[in-house]
Length: 479
Image (cartoon, rainbow, N blue to C red; front, side, top):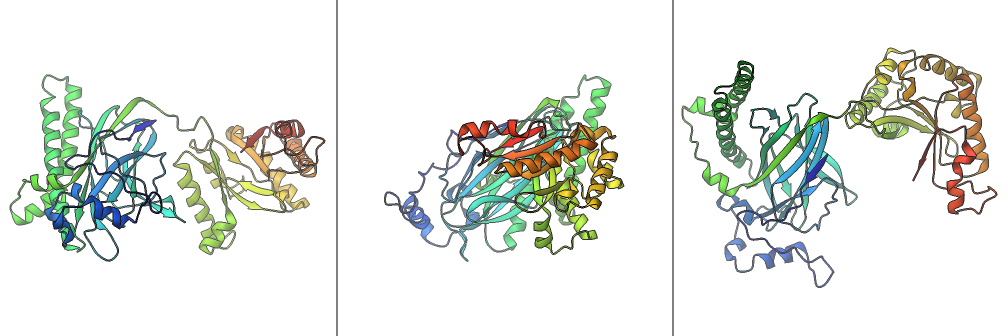
């Protein structure tokens, strides 16, 4: 629904440092030059840096950014403040956490390593949004220099590395189930600079787990104290929440280790002082987004790209499995996918389900309430044979009697450019509507026909496109 990640206050436990000059602009140098300037007078940093002896705020800038922001390598640091998100039930919202090293504390070309640990998001009534299920974390990875790919990281704890003089980002997503109790859920993301050697991982995670255990005990105690004089039904619900919380605490690595050693030190003040803690608050509204998106969003995937990328034979068992994986993956993001194969010019065969309409899998696809719309394949688009036309007729005769028929559409041609291509669209649409008069055809365009009796390239030609296609196109998409 909404998130507020632009900071306005100073980052805790650290002096706010001005952003670096951009290389080649107004005397700006490299990231290393900026690091040298910001640490002027700190002779101790010129020696080998032990991140366990310094606050992470002395080594790293951390701040929040909205999911709509593009965080480049030279994104300047901002102060850190708590992140707030507003989310409906059955909705996903995301926010970014930007990371920029102030100095390098490891070698091998990296600025340093970080241990990132996420806690569950908890409400005052003991309800949770669990890490790994409702709270997920991904690394934003650039593709050809542009922040693009979201690579999952392990939870609740993960180790990541940073490059010197560059800003990186973590993508934090909150998935709220439809049945989640409304309220305010709070948690923290702990970011700690660690040594490059693997042995430091156990020590750092163990110290952070101490805070998790302490927090869990405090929450259980709060819920228990709030149950006094509550109705029996609310008391039972509270006891169930306490039981669930205590079971989770017993599974914590810290308690498992302490049961073997016979002792446990809960004093984590030193670690908490050196760790950057990003506070995350999620307000879950008391309404549910519908399972079927109100505004359809479609996304096309080239089947030939999948075949070439994964070395799959068209129509093989692995081919169907790969398409199904892509379909299911997009559907979870409220996107109605379709697959496509290009023909001559800009003819395109599009379909949402790779199985024919009489296959059981077809009904599973088209009846899925998460699917807002689906594309029906127009087989003659690639081969205008009698066999292809028979396939089309069979598909339509089956599908037009189904309750989900109202979700269907045909996508026949991508961005027609001249009157001949417009005529072909009208002819194909006529064949479809002769079998199913209420079928819908989608046409994309960005200009009018170049050979129409209108000045080409003018706005008038653009706005008159629907007049060339009515009544053979029902859905118009422009860019």
